Length: 295
Length: 318
Image 1 (tube, chains in turn yellow, green):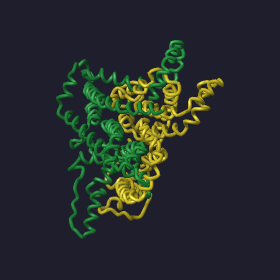
Image 2 (cartoon, one colour):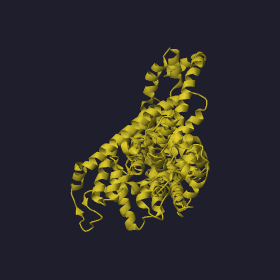
Image 3 (cartoon, helix red, strand yellow):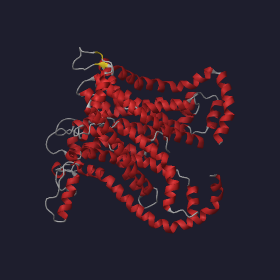
Image 4 (cartoon, one colour):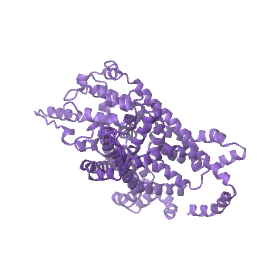
């Protein structure tokens, strides 16, 4: 590796020249192929959004009417104009569960990541892998005891139970992500602060937080997405009061007659926060999804 | 090489420091404890309870007949044919979805690694499927795409037939005739972006100097792919495959929404949900849960090994 590194600088100019002519043709076909695949993958999303703005009678046609007049009827239906069943309580529950659990995750994971990176405890790698291993076990296996516990403790259909569960679901991801961000902070700054007599809380607030802020934001967005998407726990452990957005979606389809526009409007509306969060965190998405293993 | 040097220098001093201050160690551990204790209580205790209940005779519909069952539940787990088929379904579903989305994801990552007009737009379009709420995506595919009378697939076939003036376009019942494939296609659509993102990050971490040296030495694109890119990408392919397996083994939303577990598509999470929620057989559901956990541990061991090798490499490179 070192050999190629030392030789390379003299060669780079020649390679760059040789590249330009041949690369252009191959990148044109690569571009066309990418566009084609990208469009194929995007069609269902585009179709969902388009149909959500069509009337039920236009949405239910075969062949499809792509150019049918646009209307907000689907969204009006979703927001309860016909059935009187408003999605707002469910959406507010989802927001509560996602936002509060994300804040809790940050509160727990940032100090933990500190103890795993900046001032690492002994055997910190073992601790890291313990966190990760909890993420590898299927949640469905713990569902029944959680249900029985909730039943006995009177916590069934209570949004705070989901807050706790979503916190535990995302905590390992957040610890791994946060550690990968904190490790980047130059130790010299922290040492200087410690010499000046700054305590742990002050160091966290005044030095670590500002530097790690983009990382914290990315972690928060990923945790938010996973909580917002979750359905199995929400379905089993909630009923009428604590129902979340995804559970509301599944109950929404049972109606008779034409409902495609309404379903598409509902799917679009419920996915919107995730789409916004995901595109905002696009660059950090992969790091979060691979638990910080890939940058 | 730098790491070994660093550790050999650091080791004695840290040893001394540890012996000197046991108190200092606890001070170091303190920020870690809330997260650790919280996670142990919320995720480990339920598994212990599951293990205990799995040895019990306990059906919520027959509450008086509750007691120790020995290994009866496990005997049922391993002899019940519907359960065995759900194990097979889970394996087939996971392997198919992971392999196909890895293959497409790799192809797209290779394409996106070139420069062309609108690369950012294509990347954004490719990520979009992953950002649709899973239940919403499953509903969209079930009603908006697969539905035989007004779904996009059959609608497009009709449009195509009309275009050429043909009559009686075929209108297959997609879910009815190929339930498993339809669930798989929906999941592949959602998970390809995930694979693509990991693999693209892998491609971008290739050593540019090695690539240029190979180019200068007259390597053709295939040789470069075969001898440089593929060995480098191996760990990223493994990482994507294993993380994907973990998420897809646990899949509940798609099976629940698209087929309601019917037509032979019931996977293990769905079956456990049914045993617990519809049959109310708590003992059996727990035994199923324990078996799933045992299976996951096998996958997890491999996953941990892959993640730790990437992890160690990153730390060494630091």
